[in-house]
Length: 149
Image 1 (cartoon, rainbow, N blue to C red):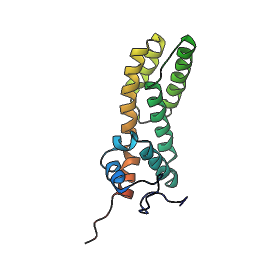
Image 2: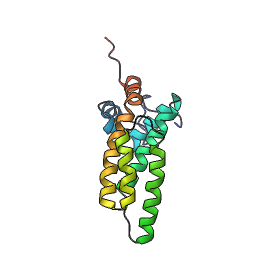
Image 3: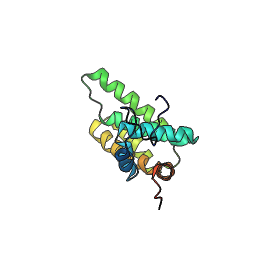
Image 4: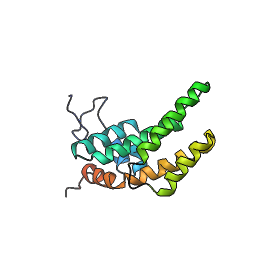
């Protein structure tokens, strides 16, 4: 069923199982670290008109992508730096992020030291996760099963 979203109970491969939902409503990291979870979270934010939350989720995904980036040659590193700059620009539009992390992003970029940049990206990922708490709480309320007595 194309419109099967999550809680309909169907067992298609694209559907989200009850055990997935249990896991996703336990903690935000479970949603963010799972592709199906992020897709469900994004769809929820889309249907709830949470544009800012979707931008923050994009930032989380781009941070994750940079953390798993593998450079094979110098042109790859230039691409990495370009993507890092784009990520920094996107992060500047997230008000919930601490000024200190933004400052570290910029200063570390100037050093062009990939290990230091990855350390800052890991810290940014934690801050971005915190910035999604409000949207995640609404998500949990929506998808936590109610107990019928």
